[in-house]
Image (cartoon, rainbow, N blue to C red; front, side):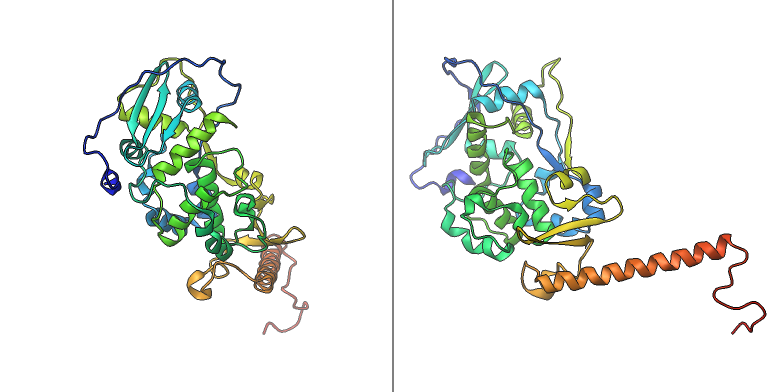
Length: 341
Protein backbone atom coordinates (compact mmCIF):
# COMPACT_ATOMS: atom_id res chain seq x y z
CA UNK A 1 0.00 0.00 0.00
CA UNK A 2 1.04 3.58 -0.55
CA UNK A 3 1.69 4.51 3.05
CA UNK A 4 4.29 1.72 3.35
CA UNK A 5 6.38 3.43 0.70
CA UNK A 6 7.17 6.46 2.85
CA UNK A 7 10.34 5.96 4.81
CA UNK A 8 9.87 7.25 8.31
CA UNK A 9 6.12 7.62 7.76
CA UNK A 10 3.73 7.66 10.65
CA UNK A 11 1.94 4.41 11.49
CA UNK A 12 -1.12 6.35 12.62
CA UNK A 13 -3.49 6.43 9.69
CA UNK A 14 -6.50 8.68 10.08
CA UNK A 15 -9.61 8.16 8.01
CA UNK A 16 -11.48 10.87 6.09
CA UNK A 17 -12.84 13.51 8.42
CA UNK A 18 -14.44 16.92 8.64
CA UNK A 19 -11.97 19.80 8.54
CA UNK A 20 -11.96 23.35 9.83
CA UNK A 21 -10.91 25.99 7.34
CA UNK A 22 -11.32 29.72 7.01
CA UNK A 23 -13.85 31.18 4.63
CA UNK A 24 -12.47 32.77 1.47
CA UNK A 25 -11.92 36.50 1.77
CA UNK A 26 -12.62 36.99 -1.94
CA UNK A 27 -15.77 35.85 -3.76
CA UNK A 28 -15.40 32.68 -5.86
CA UNK A 29 -13.82 33.33 -9.23
CA UNK A 30 -16.16 33.14 -12.20
CA UNK A 31 -15.34 29.93 -14.06
CA UNK A 32 -17.55 27.46 -15.94
CA UNK A 33 -17.93 23.87 -14.76
CA UNK A 34 -16.91 21.45 -17.51
CA UNK A 35 -17.69 17.73 -17.77
CA UNK A 36 -14.96 15.14 -17.96
CA UNK A 37 -15.20 13.44 -21.36
CA UNK A 38 -15.49 9.66 -21.46
CA UNK A 39 -14.27 7.38 -24.26
CA UNK A 40 -16.91 6.52 -26.87
CA UNK A 41 -17.33 2.78 -27.45
CA UNK A 42 -19.02 3.39 -30.80
CA UNK A 43 -16.27 5.65 -32.07
CA UNK A 44 -13.49 3.31 -30.97
CA UNK A 45 -15.21 0.40 -32.69
CA UNK A 46 -15.62 2.40 -35.88
CA UNK A 47 -11.99 3.60 -35.82
CA UNK A 48 -10.64 0.14 -35.05
CA UNK A 49 -8.77 1.22 -31.90
CA UNK A 50 -10.88 -0.30 -29.12
CA UNK A 51 -8.71 -3.37 -28.57
CA UNK A 52 -5.54 -1.29 -28.21
CA UNK A 53 -7.30 1.25 -25.99
CA UNK A 54 -8.46 -1.50 -23.65
CA UNK A 55 -4.93 -2.92 -23.52
CA UNK A 56 -3.67 0.52 -22.46
CA UNK A 57 -6.30 0.62 -19.70
CA UNK A 58 -5.04 -2.71 -18.41
CA UNK A 59 -1.39 -1.61 -18.57
CA UNK A 60 -2.15 1.43 -16.40
CA UNK A 61 -4.56 -0.39 -14.04
CA UNK A 62 -7.37 1.93 -15.12
CA UNK A 63 -10.01 -0.61 -16.13
CA UNK A 64 -12.24 0.01 -13.10
CA UNK A 65 -11.66 3.76 -13.41
CA UNK A 66 -13.09 3.79 -16.95
CA UNK A 67 -15.85 1.22 -16.44
CA UNK A 68 -17.88 3.28 -13.97
CA UNK A 69 -18.93 6.38 -15.89
CA UNK A 70 -20.36 8.17 -12.87
CA UNK A 71 -22.69 11.14 -13.03
CA UNK A 72 -21.31 14.63 -12.55
CA UNK A 73 -23.11 17.47 -10.78
CA UNK A 74 -22.72 21.20 -11.21
CA UNK A 75 -22.63 22.56 -7.66
CA UNK A 76 -20.98 19.46 -6.19
CA UNK A 77 -18.14 19.81 -8.74
CA UNK A 78 -17.85 23.55 -8.26
CA UNK A 79 -17.60 23.33 -4.47
CA UNK A 80 -15.11 20.43 -4.68
CA UNK A 81 -12.69 21.90 -7.23
CA UNK A 82 -12.69 25.60 -6.26
CA UNK A 83 -10.92 25.08 -2.93
CA UNK A 84 -9.19 21.76 -3.53
CA UNK A 85 -5.73 21.62 -1.96
CA UNK A 86 -3.02 18.97 -2.08
CA UNK A 87 -0.29 18.76 0.53
CA UNK A 88 2.52 16.52 -0.65
CA UNK A 89 4.25 16.05 2.69
CA UNK A 90 6.48 12.98 2.38
CA UNK A 91 5.25 11.48 5.63
CA UNK A 92 1.54 12.20 5.30
CA UNK A 93 0.31 13.48 1.91
CA UNK A 94 -3.27 14.71 2.22
CA UNK A 95 -6.02 16.48 0.28
CA UNK A 96 -8.37 19.16 1.56
CA UNK A 97 -11.64 19.97 -0.20
CA UNK A 98 -15.22 21.08 0.15
CA UNK A 99 -18.38 19.15 -0.64
CA UNK A 100 -21.12 21.74 -0.68
CA UNK A 101 -20.69 23.86 2.47
CA UNK A 102 -18.64 21.33 4.48
CA UNK A 103 -14.86 20.86 4.37
CA UNK A 104 -13.11 17.48 4.56
CA UNK A 105 -9.60 16.12 4.62
CA UNK A 106 -8.34 12.66 3.76
CA UNK A 107 -4.97 11.09 3.16
CA UNK A 108 -3.78 10.47 -0.37
CA UNK A 109 -4.21 6.71 -0.09
CA UNK A 110 -7.92 7.01 0.69
CA UNK A 111 -8.36 9.69 -1.98
CA UNK A 112 -6.71 7.44 -4.58
CA UNK A 113 -8.94 4.53 -3.59
CA UNK A 114 -12.08 6.68 -3.71
CA UNK A 115 -11.15 7.89 -7.22
CA UNK A 116 -10.55 4.31 -8.46
CA UNK A 117 -6.92 5.00 -9.29
CA UNK A 118 -3.99 2.60 -8.77
CA UNK A 119 -1.85 2.96 -5.65
CA UNK A 120 1.64 2.37 -7.06
CA UNK A 121 4.41 4.92 -7.66
CA UNK A 122 6.17 7.86 -6.08
CA UNK A 123 4.17 10.92 -5.02
CA UNK A 124 6.93 13.23 -6.27
CA UNK A 125 6.22 15.59 -9.15
CA UNK A 126 7.32 13.83 -12.38
CA UNK A 127 10.48 15.26 -13.97
CA UNK A 128 10.69 16.33 -17.62
CA UNK A 129 13.98 14.56 -18.24
CA UNK A 130 12.37 11.15 -17.63
CA UNK A 131 9.88 11.50 -20.49
CA UNK A 132 11.78 13.11 -23.38
CA UNK A 133 12.73 9.78 -24.94
CA UNK A 134 9.19 8.45 -24.62
CA UNK A 135 7.76 11.60 -26.25
CA UNK A 136 10.24 11.28 -29.13
CA UNK A 137 9.25 7.64 -29.66
CA UNK A 138 5.53 8.36 -30.24
CA UNK A 139 5.63 11.70 -32.11
CA UNK A 140 7.00 13.18 -35.34
CA UNK A 141 8.13 16.77 -35.86
CA UNK A 142 7.96 17.65 -32.15
CA UNK A 143 10.92 19.94 -31.49
CA UNK A 144 9.36 21.97 -28.68
CA UNK A 145 9.74 21.55 -24.94
CA UNK A 146 7.56 18.91 -23.34
CA UNK A 147 5.21 21.53 -21.90
CA UNK A 148 4.47 22.81 -25.45
CA UNK A 149 4.24 19.42 -27.16
CA UNK A 150 0.94 18.88 -28.96
CA UNK A 151 -1.19 15.76 -28.90
CA UNK A 152 -1.61 16.06 -32.67
CA UNK A 153 2.02 15.08 -33.21
CA UNK A 154 1.28 11.57 -31.87
CA UNK A 155 1.08 9.14 -34.79
CA UNK A 156 -0.72 5.99 -33.67
CA UNK A 157 -4.45 6.80 -33.36
CA UNK A 158 -5.00 4.57 -30.30
CA UNK A 159 -2.22 6.38 -28.41
CA UNK A 160 -3.51 9.75 -29.66
CA UNK A 161 -7.02 8.88 -28.48
CA UNK A 162 -5.75 7.73 -25.07
CA UNK A 163 -3.83 11.01 -24.72
CA UNK A 164 -7.10 12.89 -25.28
CA UNK A 165 -8.77 10.66 -22.67
CA UNK A 166 -6.02 11.68 -20.23
CA UNK A 167 -6.36 15.39 -21.01
CA UNK A 168 -10.17 15.52 -21.05
CA UNK A 169 -10.98 13.00 -18.32
CA UNK A 170 -8.19 11.71 -16.07
CA UNK A 171 -6.27 15.00 -15.86
CA UNK A 172 -9.22 17.14 -16.95
CA UNK A 173 -7.91 20.53 -18.10
CA UNK A 174 -8.47 23.41 -20.52
CA UNK A 175 -5.49 22.94 -22.79
CA UNK A 176 -6.14 19.38 -23.86
CA UNK A 177 -4.34 19.91 -27.19
CA UNK A 178 -1.04 20.40 -25.34
CA UNK A 179 0.64 17.71 -23.29
CA UNK A 180 2.44 18.25 -20.01
CA UNK A 181 4.74 16.04 -17.98
CA UNK A 182 1.93 14.52 -15.84
CA UNK A 183 0.00 13.67 -19.02
CA UNK A 184 3.04 11.93 -20.48
CA UNK A 185 3.56 10.07 -17.22
CA UNK A 186 0.05 8.58 -17.40
CA UNK A 187 0.45 7.91 -21.14
CA UNK A 188 3.74 6.09 -20.57
CA UNK A 189 1.99 3.95 -17.96
CA UNK A 190 -0.67 3.07 -20.52
CA UNK A 191 1.63 2.32 -23.45
CA UNK A 192 4.59 0.74 -21.65
CA UNK A 193 3.21 -0.29 -18.25
CA UNK A 194 5.44 2.28 -16.53
CA UNK A 195 4.70 2.63 -12.81
CA UNK A 196 7.10 5.32 -11.65
CA UNK A 197 4.66 7.89 -10.29
CA UNK A 198 1.46 7.78 -8.27
CA UNK A 199 -1.62 8.63 -10.32
CA UNK A 200 -3.54 9.79 -7.24
CA UNK A 201 -0.89 12.45 -6.61
CA UNK A 202 -0.92 13.46 -10.29
CA UNK A 203 -4.71 13.92 -10.21
CA UNK A 204 -4.58 15.76 -6.86
CA UNK A 205 -2.07 18.26 -8.26
CA UNK A 206 -4.24 18.81 -11.34
CA UNK A 207 -7.35 19.44 -9.21
CA UNK A 208 -5.32 21.88 -7.09
CA UNK A 209 -4.33 23.74 -10.27
CA UNK A 210 -7.87 23.65 -11.66
CA UNK A 211 -9.10 25.36 -8.52
CA UNK A 212 -6.66 28.22 -9.09
CA UNK A 213 -7.11 28.85 -12.81
CA UNK A 214 -9.02 27.71 -15.87
CA UNK A 215 -12.34 25.95 -16.13
CA UNK A 216 -13.54 23.71 -13.32
CA UNK A 217 -12.86 20.13 -14.40
CA UNK A 218 -13.08 17.25 -11.94
CA UNK A 219 -16.74 16.21 -11.62
CA UNK A 220 -15.98 12.49 -11.65
CA UNK A 221 -13.68 12.91 -8.66
CA UNK A 222 -16.21 15.04 -6.79
CA UNK A 223 -18.87 12.34 -7.28
CA UNK A 224 -16.57 9.45 -6.38
CA UNK A 225 -15.22 11.09 -3.25
CA UNK A 226 -18.75 12.05 -2.19
CA UNK A 227 -19.87 8.44 -2.71
CA UNK A 228 -16.86 7.20 -0.71
CA UNK A 229 -17.91 9.48 2.17
CA UNK A 230 -21.59 8.55 1.88
CA UNK A 231 -22.66 12.03 0.75
CA UNK A 232 -25.50 12.12 -1.77
CA UNK A 233 -25.94 14.87 -4.37
CA UNK A 234 -28.24 17.60 -3.13
CA UNK A 235 -31.78 17.83 -4.41
CA UNK A 236 -31.84 20.43 -7.15
CA UNK A 237 -28.14 20.11 -7.96
CA UNK A 238 -28.10 20.04 -11.76
CA UNK A 239 -26.57 17.00 -13.38
CA UNK A 240 -23.93 17.93 -15.96
CA UNK A 241 -24.83 16.39 -19.34
CA UNK A 242 -22.40 13.52 -20.05
CA UNK A 243 -19.75 14.16 -22.69
CA UNK A 244 -17.92 11.64 -24.84
CA UNK A 245 -14.92 11.54 -27.13
CA UNK A 246 -17.17 10.71 -30.08
CA UNK A 247 -17.01 11.64 -33.77
CA UNK A 248 -17.94 15.30 -33.28
CA UNK A 249 -15.45 15.64 -30.41
CA UNK A 250 -12.71 14.07 -32.54
CA UNK A 251 -13.32 16.63 -35.29
CA UNK A 252 -13.26 19.41 -32.68
CA UNK A 253 -9.97 18.10 -31.25
CA UNK A 254 -8.48 17.93 -34.79
CA UNK A 255 -8.13 14.16 -34.55
CA UNK A 256 -10.21 13.81 -37.73
CA UNK A 257 -11.01 15.78 -40.83
CA UNK A 258 -14.78 16.18 -41.10
CA UNK A 259 -16.01 13.66 -43.64
CA UNK A 260 -19.38 12.05 -43.10
CA UNK A 261 -18.49 9.03 -45.28
CA UNK A 262 -15.02 8.07 -43.99
CA UNK A 263 -12.93 8.54 -40.86
CA UNK A 264 -9.99 10.59 -42.14
CA UNK A 265 -7.34 10.60 -39.41
CA UNK A 266 -4.97 13.58 -39.50
CA UNK A 267 -1.46 12.09 -39.57
CA UNK A 268 0.80 15.09 -38.93
CA UNK A 269 4.45 15.41 -39.94
CA UNK A 270 4.74 19.18 -39.57
CA UNK A 271 2.49 22.20 -39.96
CA UNK A 272 2.53 21.96 -43.73
CA UNK A 273 2.42 18.21 -44.14
CA UNK A 274 -0.68 16.37 -42.98
CA UNK A 275 -1.61 13.06 -44.58
CA UNK A 276 -5.27 12.02 -44.23
CA UNK A 277 -5.42 8.31 -43.40
CA UNK A 278 -8.64 6.32 -43.56
CA UNK A 279 -9.46 4.45 -40.34
CA UNK A 280 -9.47 1.63 -39.44
CA UNK A 281 -5.86 1.06 -40.50
CA UNK A 282 -4.59 -1.85 -38.38
CA UNK A 283 -1.76 -2.79 -40.75
CA UNK A 284 -0.42 0.74 -40.98
CA UNK A 285 -0.41 1.28 -37.22
CA UNK A 286 1.00 -2.09 -36.16
CA UNK A 287 3.75 -1.84 -33.54
CA UNK A 288 4.41 -5.58 -33.57
CA UNK A 289 5.22 -5.49 -37.28
CA UNK A 290 7.07 -2.15 -37.34
CA UNK A 291 8.78 -2.08 -33.97
CA UNK A 292 8.01 1.65 -33.72
CA UNK A 293 5.12 3.98 -32.90
CA UNK A 294 5.55 6.29 -35.91
CA UNK A 295 4.74 5.97 -39.61
CA UNK A 296 6.87 7.30 -42.46
CA UNK A 297 5.27 9.68 -44.94
CA UNK A 298 5.91 7.19 -47.74
CA UNK A 299 4.12 4.42 -45.83
CA UNK A 300 1.13 6.67 -45.15
CA UNK A 301 0.90 7.94 -48.73
CA UNK A 302 1.16 4.44 -50.20
CA UNK A 303 -1.48 3.13 -47.79
CA UNK A 304 -3.94 5.91 -48.62
CA UNK A 305 -3.31 5.50 -52.35
CA UNK A 306 -4.27 1.85 -52.00
CA UNK A 307 -7.38 2.74 -50.01
CA UNK A 308 -8.47 5.23 -52.67
CA UNK A 309 -8.00 2.62 -55.41
CA UNK A 310 -10.08 0.16 -53.38
CA UNK A 311 -12.83 2.75 -52.92
CA UNK A 312 -12.93 3.49 -56.65
CA UNK A 313 -13.07 -0.21 -57.47
CA UNK A 314 -15.92 -0.73 -54.99
CA UNK A 315 -17.79 2.27 -56.41
CA UNK A 316 -17.41 0.89 -59.93
CA UNK A 317 -18.75 -2.49 -58.84
CA UNK A 318 -21.71 -0.83 -57.14
CA UNK A 319 -22.45 1.15 -60.29
CA UNK A 320 -22.42 -2.04 -62.38
CA UNK A 321 -24.67 -3.82 -59.89
CA UNK A 322 -27.09 -0.89 -59.73
CA UNK A 323 -27.30 -0.60 -63.53
CA UNK A 324 -27.84 -4.33 -64.02
CA UNK A 325 -30.57 -4.39 -61.36
CA UNK A 326 -32.63 -1.44 -62.55
CA UNK A 327 -31.88 -1.17 -66.29
CA UNK A 328 -33.39 -4.03 -68.33
CA UNK A 329 -31.35 -3.01 -71.38
CA UNK A 330 -27.97 -3.30 -69.55
CA UNK A 331 -25.91 -6.05 -71.27
CA UNK A 332 -22.69 -6.15 -69.15
CA UNK A 333 -20.74 -4.90 -72.20
CA UNK A 334 -21.96 -7.59 -74.62
CA UNK A 335 -23.32 -6.54 -78.03
CA UNK A 336 -26.91 -7.57 -78.83
CA UNK A 337 -26.93 -10.75 -80.85
CA UNK A 338 -23.33 -11.64 -79.92
CA UNK A 339 -22.26 -14.82 -78.11
CA UNK A 340 -22.36 -14.93 -74.28
CA UNK A 341 -18.97 -16.34 -73.37
